[in-house]
Amino acid sequence: MEWARRARRAASSMIRGRRKPEPKAERAAADNWHDNLDAEQRRFVVDHTVDPIRPDIGQAGKPRPRHACLDQRPRVSVVLGTLNRRKLLEKCLASVRRELEGMDGEIIVIDGGSEDRTIPWLTKQEDVITILQYNRYKNGETSMRRRSWGGFMNMGFRAASADYILMISDDCLLMPGAIRNGIEQIEAARKAGVPVGACAFYFRDWPKQKRYYVQRTIGGNLMLNHGIYTREALEAAQYANEDDYVFYKSDTDLSLKIWDSGYAIIDAPQSICEHYVGIEEELRAGNTALMSYDRSQMKQYWPDLVTDEGVRKMGKIYLDQPPGDEADKEWTKLYRHEERVAKKRNPNLK
Image 1 (spheres, rainbow, N blue to C red):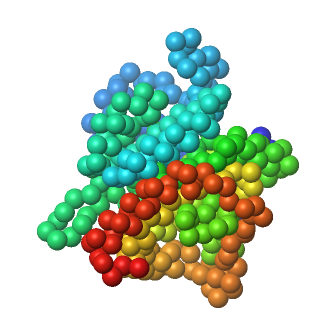
Image 2: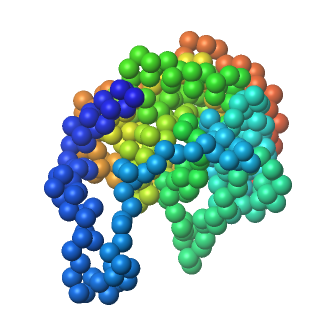
């Protein structure tokens, strides 16, 4: 497709030296390393004695249709992570299932080692691909993670088989039409010549926020908090950064890498996602040490975007639409329970 070719050309000029392509001569030499093996190399390449005809994908035959016993690849893969939040997860998946009705879709949940009966519940869900990875453990008094957010979510991204990959959280509700409208927005933008790498859904943090929005991060670049990635853009961006962030800024970094790879992030005003922020999550948000660490990492990684001018361009783009009552109906009882439990633990909590 022409837009994809333009994206790849743009990527080579936008990457600013971070991932310089190899010169053609060097790539050719690397591809043909096996043509002149020395004695030491021949010890490891034992089939050299028959002068094998090496595979060349450029000469591969035309692929055949999938076997009749195999389902077609889904149109969209829904990927989300969870840990000890079964009540929220059940409500989230109910909204996902409703949105996937009549569509070819799959659901992938990465569980970080839940202890609230989430795991046995998940393994009974025949329409859910469950990836179980015990991510948290104690090292003395230190709470450790085997993988960062990027490493955790990449398991789901790489397992996804569709070209459209929707990322949400286990504490989200998709509003009616969110997935279909997001895909339609991507395809309309592509027809207009925009090399779409992701499509951001409008959201709000319930119950405190009253307006839906998407965000411009450093440099004024639109980012994806919840929404659809294209497989091509994720591959071009080399997926989420697994090493330089712990949690808070990994999704921001992934959005910047998508822009850096020559793809655009667009918005979908008809795609809305409610995001639950309960008492416990508000308290966790006070973990300023991890937040500060991730912010400092971002400053090191994207120094040209954290200038005064780049920070001034940050902000929210609001949707001129009042919130519905779906979140109130689904979550109010759970939120009140959290409040009561939190006040028992800390009577001074407001």
